[in-house]
Image (cartoon, rainbow, N blue to C red; front, side, top):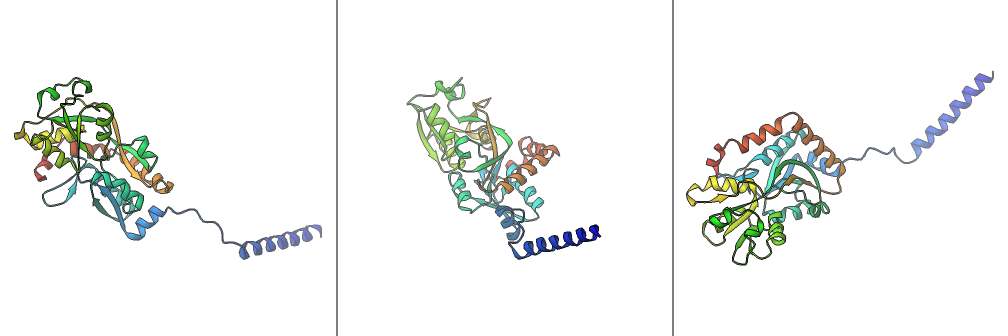
Length: 275
């Protein structure tokens, strides 16, 4: 008899508890990333890029943006089950576009620096770069260190808003610095003799030498710095950050990321597609 009373009492308690659950607030659901949710609902991943930083990103004669980063972004969009849209703009405007929500992420040869990381989140690196110098001047070409060119008589150009600009301002303060909107404009300044040299990421300097063989351009043999390149993401979206971390980890471990690096850095057939 006691067992029957206890069983009935237990059913009564459970029925009251169940009533409390159903008449109160709905159960808490797992948080949904606003970034991933918006991307999937839109059916489109919007990635910001300069489209002028070969071989990581560049624009062909037909207007198509190609390179290591567009390839990574394309695979990423496919993994999300959405289409890819590349939004091109000047490099200096990319992080502002990300903070406004105009793009979902930025992949544009962007160095992961502490200053930038205080404004946005980063995942990576998917590539290691470094600063170099593109020039037509034998003196700068043979420079052993930064002090050899840190003189008032030296004029340099660097991409506006880039770590190259910071590099010149901090380590070459005596030089004359002319900021450029994009690398095409910066290289043109060197070719036309308007500046003595361009400070930029090592791959861009090397590719510029290959693109314009008749201009007598030269680059340093070794980079002056080591810079990790990563994906810039909104700082308030941990789930999107986590997804991109997992995606890049998978791409690296599968060997696909290394294959993409070889495609864009060892094979130069794509140079013919550039204007």
